[in-house]
Amino acid sequence: MLASISVWFSLMVLGCAEQPRQVERFGMAIGLKTDGIDEYKRLHADVWPDVLRMIRECNIHNYSIYLAEIDNDEYCLFGYFEYTGEDFKKDMEKMKADPATRRWWKHTDPLQFKLPAAGEDEWWHNLQEVFHAD
Amino acid sequence: MLASISVWFSLMVLGCAEQPRQVERFGMAIGLKTDGIDEYKRLHADVWPDVLRMIRECNIHNYSIYLAEIDNDEYCLFGYFEYTGEDFKKDMEKMKADPATRRWWKHTDPLQFKLPAAGEDEWWHNLQEVFHAD
Image 1 (spheres, chains in turn blue, yellow):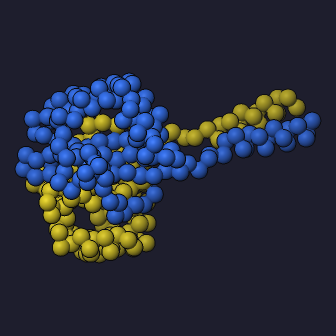
Image 2 (cartoon, helix red, strand yellow; image 1 turned 180 degrees about the vertical axis):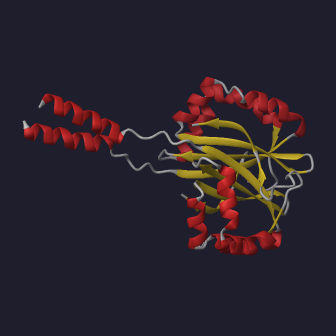
Image 3 (cartoon, rainbow over the protein chains, first blue to last red; image 1 turned 180 degrees about the horizontal axis):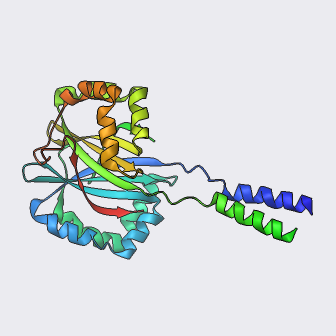
């Protein structure tokens, strides 16, 4: 009996030990047209469930987007998310191939514009992390 | 015996259940002078331990700062952090009163500039969250 309790205890402890999750952080930015702000907000107040599902399936978590008035009447969006998968490029290709996400982007892309600093292969511009504290 | 195992089991489950931590997310932005970029990066590659300690003591976690070239040769910083305390204003006053943090800001403040959209009581401009997915 004591032995079985001991095994049970060990399993319980193992069961609740949190697995260290590997997290890669991303910060990104893109321009937002002044006359696109209202529509962008409207869309993001009620993001399609299929789009949210694909975000999760592509191992993206804790994803926030902020609106910033960066100069007088000039706006951009800042995004922050945490990636927990093992192949970011592959997951992004999966997202790009998802029909619901592609339809979603047909609504959001015309509201945005690429920043001058964004590379040829970028839409959102990937930002350099200069500080992090857990 | 069964009763005591049952109590023990209940305690174990309670013991490993994660406490839901209340998290308030913040996104913020500030300008960075072009000729301040190198010094800002140098400082933030090795932030003073007393400054990091005060950040933690003020209940700020998962704090990242990104550098963004927002237009040709125009830069800003995008900050993201999670606040887990119960009185943000009080914690920020504590931080502002900390001698090490005040000395730190004497190095970083001259490298930055307020965005036009920032309020009178702001240095970093607090941004509006338009989207979040866990």
